[in-house]
Image (cartoon, one colour):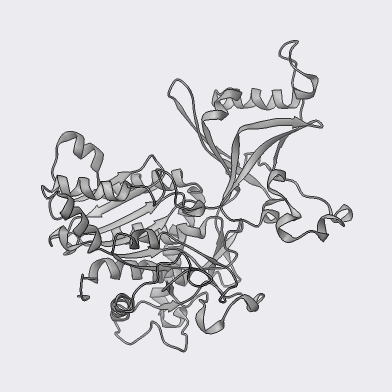
Length: 482
């Protein structure tokens, strides 16, 4: 990006980020988008995201904090460490030259996405067809998940301790599965229902087979022969038995990779932009930091945001707090007071997606306070619903500091609310981090079709997010920006 200091960020008359790129910069935008598309296509679950990130950052010189603890190793300025949370989340630190007790510059995002999870006893047969019973995960329009090819990703943990990785439906030679839908000719009653009831949760069953197998023994019911054959195929391919579904985490996600969208290839259509479109540039920004930083930088990528940030891998867990304590201990600086000071004095961009203005549905947006594709990364002072319920509501002082950093580093950005007042609402992990007393603001990328099987973002916005995150890491100070 050029070093021009003219204001290209927020003003009351929006500017399209594409207009500021010269030909060479536009090539960089498209090249970064190709890397992101590759990531999206390969990483459709929180486990796949965490595994790929851990491998990539280890290659970049980050060391496993748990192994350092086990070996009694210490940390000092310039060190790079990471820690995984049960294979579903990851946090990475670049230790700065300034005392860590002055706080950190922190990026946060989530790597789980809406999907269909297989139940613990999923496989059954009905009318000569084998199906898999599911429980949807996150907020979805259920009718959008029918009549489309789906792939199966996840793990199966066996009683002997072995873990089987499953990825079925992504290779061009793989079969796919999916939820069937009712034909229009017979859907007169269905079409009279409210949208939330057109397809109900218990009807999101994945069709997975129709060939009867051979009777295994006299106890095998004739009505279960298709199911029997599916189990035989699974046994041959993965070495599992039906009982192993009890200790499995299998996710049905849209099959196929990320694609260029638009005749000008300016956008990307894919499953999982929410919130990998923020997670990808966040950890890439960490990898792009110079060898020496003043203020310690960190990137936290968590699971379970789509269902309330719950559980041991969600933001409500104490994983981040415990890990910061371990970092302080490795630096010989741990105390309860130092831990509290370090977290409270930190500043954070809580990176999550925002609802982009859609000219097909203008009534749900207030045009002067919503975000648009191609106009840069998005700052949300508050999210929540109704009277800002459940929001973080960042302070004016902190927003001013973030604005200054972005403007001085030529980052295109815009501000937004999540739709018209009382229209709906939503939340992020920002308020959870705000509970520690740190300054936090929601930031991210505008998305069309949010929570649908195929979401859309602008390549320019992905690029601006990357540079915005990098500028924040390098230049935000506690008190005033550098």
